[in-house]
Image 1 (cartoon, one colour):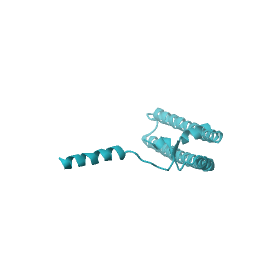
Image 2: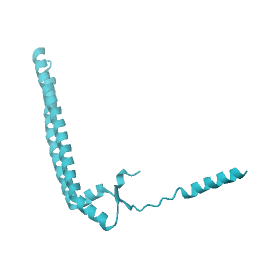
Image 3: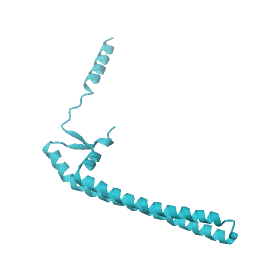
Image 4: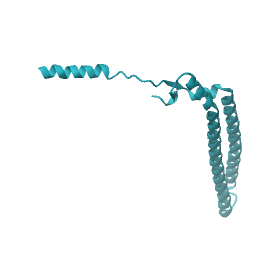
Length: 149
């Protein structure tokens, strides 16, 4: 019985005092997406990226409509022209579709690279201000609020 009371005392001691952690590090949270959307420079970057994206989408839609009209013309000619000419035009259309897909993939990769570069520049520019804020408020760790569960 003596051992049971000692063990229960130790277990109770562990449960009551193990949960408290005393740390000298001050931790703060920041929402970087809000900083990007609310700052003047961030708004400017977002606007530029949206313009580039809209231009890309417009040019791709034009090419897409052109390809669909070519396909319609080929379907209309299908019964009129010979099979050899039909297959040539069909192969030509397939080649144009492949070029369209390649162009689309290249535009997407260029846009993603531009977006990454612009965001890197933005975060490099705000870094000194964030560091100054951390120093003034004795914050040792600053975490992005979106990455915390």
